[in-house]
Length: 233
Image (cartoon, rainbow, N blue to C red; front, side):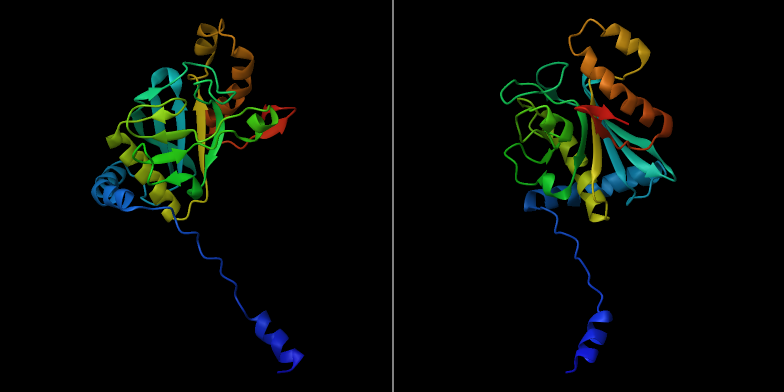
């Protein structure tokens, strides 16, 4: 075959990158079979599209994990789940073994799903993120998972992680590439900042506040860049 025809052939080829296979297990599949129809009804009743993008945020002092769904050009709150347990009270994780749960801005990708966790079902939050790596923070395998027991993770009851895990899985299955996960010590309005002003973590918390405020204003997940070794928006 001449070089001309080889060139012509390759010029008409369409290279398709197949979507990576999602981590899965019989356990997770059985959960979806039971849980997803119920979630579909809830989504439809609240006016959400089943395949809409999702966003997650956590407030430690309220033991609250929020799942937001995109509706039109903005995100709206779909459901709030009570966190069963997290360790270390307020203040972010900085080193392996400090028994603290992280605070900051993270992202979840499909590879962070663990459908065969010792804690039922688990989602790695992505600690340490870029800022934390620059600061030399240590530790790994920080999860949102089931079994309501943890050191450094965000533990849910099994019934709650079934829903959260299924929502995350279905978002990835529908084509979402990553899910923003923002973890705050509290709702970072002026009243709460004043109430917690005596805490030794206030300088760090002030670097989170602009990201919190930006989402509150736009209802769109934020993207941070790094200034020095801190978050900037």
